[in-house]
Image 1 (cartoon, rainbow, N blue to C red):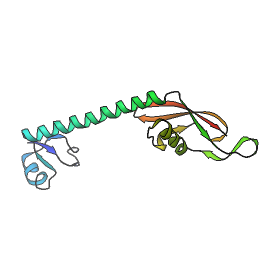
Image 2: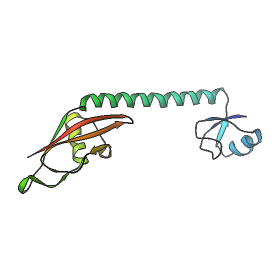
Image 3: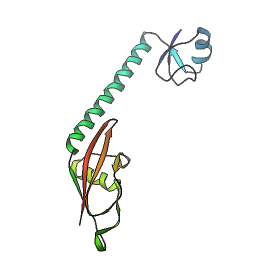
Image 4: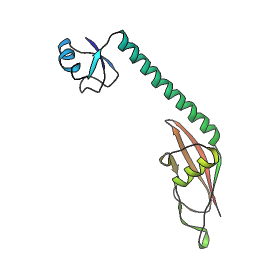
Length: 147
């Protein structure tokens, strides 16, 4: 009997998959526990619509990431900081500060964990950094620290 899984079932499949299960297993175990439903025309249509919806969401996220990459690619983010003697900063410039500056300047929300900084930024100067916008889509930016 073909069934559509409503939840992950160990040894059978993951949620949303169409699988073959024996008639007794499906009727006596999966369906009473609301783990699966019979794969009729309505269930197949719902499964197809859910897959289409998921693909549409992924496509829109990729399009937004590509737009953000065009905006950010090779741009310089200027951050003002105070320093002590010899140009050493009080503390260091963090990914959180870079993310806030990107949000203010370009109106692009970037998670601080998606910003990779080569080394620590503890002095004035220009540093390379990468912003991961989506899986496989990254933008290279420059971070300039000045007074």
